[in-house]
Length: 368
Image: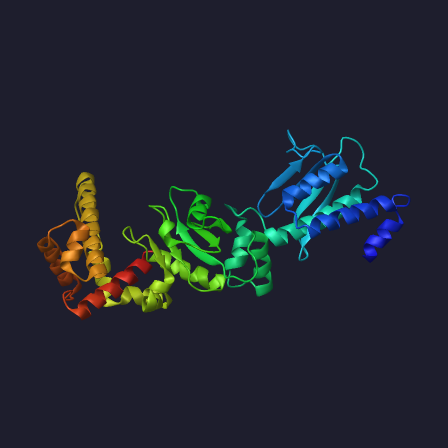
C-alpha cells in the first residue's frame, strides 16, 4: 500500500482514476473471477486489446475491447507487467494500444497482474494439458524442499491438502496428455515427459481406465517424490499381460527394487532365468541367413518360455495357465517341466513356485 500511495501521489491529476482502477480490481478479486473474465474486464476498461500469458503452460489469452477473442497476431505491447507468485515470475500481462500508453496504464497493469496471480493460485491452469517439465521435476524430485514442491504443485493447478497421485507411463501410441485425461476425467491432471518415461500427476488415478497398449506404474505414497520412485518400480514390473501395476499391490516383492543390480544378477535362480530367457548361441561358423533364422527361432522360443512361466506363476495352476495361453494343460506341463530342469527348480512345489516368482520379478527389474 505504501508503494501504491507513492505512485498515486505522482499521478495527480489522475489520482481519482487510479483509485477507481484499484477498486475495480478489488471487486473482481472478491468475486473470484477466472483468467478469461479478468482479461475481458481489463480489455473493456482499457479500451484496447489486453493479454495474459503464463510461462508454465504456455497459455495465452488475448481479448479485444468488445469482449471477444482478439483476432490476428499479437501487436506490439504498449505496456507490460510481470505476474509474480511467491517471489517467482509465472507470467506477464500487457496492453496493445495502437498509440502511446495511457497515463493510468501502469496502474491498470499492476492491478491486473496481482489479480492474475490470485486467480492462478486459486484455480491453477487448465486441468488437462502437458505441463512444464521443470515444474513437474520439482514436484517429483527427492532434492526439492517442501516449500518449493508446494509452490510447484500450486502453479500446476493442484489445491493444497489432498495428496497428488503419481504414475509413471510408457505410451508408444497415445499422447501423454490424452492418457492423463482418460485416467483422471473431470479432475486436475498434469502430464510431462521426463527422459523416456511419462509422468502423470493427478488428484486421482483410475487404473481400470488406462488404454490398451499403455504401460503404467502407480505410486502409493502420499509424498510425490516417494510416489514417483514407487511408480517407476511398478512400471518396471509390468508385462504385456499385466500392463498396469499399483505399487501398493507388490507387497514384499517391492523390496527387490532395493537390491543392487549386480546382486540380483549373481543370484543362481536369476542367472538361470537370464540364460533361459534367451542367451544366444555362439557357433564358430554360421552364415548370415542361418544366424538370422536362429535368432528368430530363439526369440520366439524365449517369448513362449517366459509367457508360460509368467502365466504359471500368476495362477499357480497348470490348467489355469493353459486357459490363459490357449493351450492344452499337458503342453503347459511339458513346458513347465523343461523350464524347471533349466532352472534346477521343481516348479510344482510351493517352494519352487515361490523361487520362480521371485526370480521372474528380479529378471524384470534387471530388464529396465
